[in-house]
Length: 218
Image 1 (cartoon, rainbow, N blue to C red):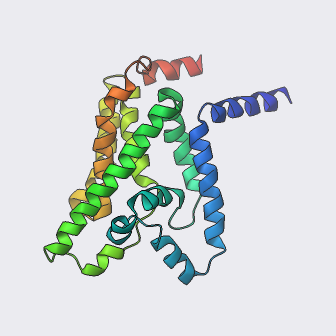
Image 2 (image 1 turned 30 degrees about the vertical axis):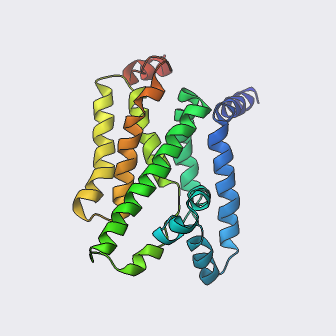
């Protein structure tokens, strides 16, 4: 019983240390449940109105940039619990809620505008169909990619370089092989996250994974 209470207390402390992460995750849970109660036809139309595609951005950019980050395309919530706990919660606990949120907003907004701007240029040049202006584009992956990237500064050199290599492989290979405008958005988010280095100053010394592992074992 003491062990159970100890684990529960540590979990609660961890969650309380990243309130923005878990409030956002709770919102995603509610919206995901709502999606499961919609018919497929209504769901697509509903999400398209909250999508950051060219058409919706042209009409009401502020609304769709906010609303698109509150829905998950595909209706699978549990994987995001893991991703948010591993990346978002770590970044928020390290940077503080305000700075973490700045990274999220910068990656989500700027990557969306850059990728949709590139798509608009492709449509005008005849490289993409006009119907692409109303494609479904919602989700939280741009903000996640930005946070994944900024966490590189949490890791001490030389371990940081290995982490960055994995990040660039994960987000760079799709862009290099069969690129889509979403792939461009993800890679742009990584660069934006790395550009948020000034927000990491004064947030403590980088962690050495070797020392951290030794401390956990001992």
